[in-house]
Image (tube, rainbow, N blue to C red; front, side, top):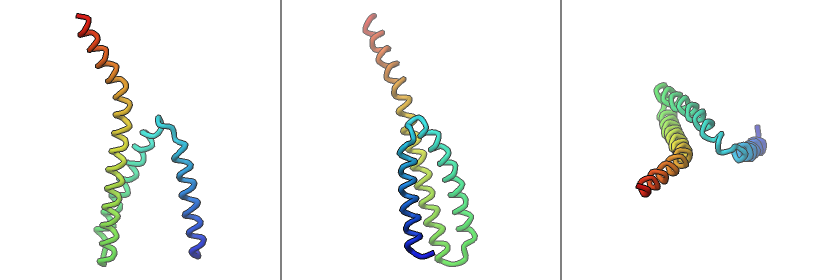
Length: 107
């Protein structure tokens, strides 16, 4: 493949990915992130296996970079999922706290 074809495929993939992700509703975001975190865990295990079988310094360096990037991506996914779940907990938690305060004020 020549460079123009590869760049064209990359640009189209970025455009399609942006359009697909931007159309996901917030209620579906958390389950999709959980699935993505599972996939990133598999990618991390694969990168560790590749690092174990590396023979040259270049292979080892690239596999360590893959391990670092996969770890960052997986941890970031868990952080985003945790924030999304906290948003859903915050709505029910705030209403319970305000009713407790009003019940305390009535006594």
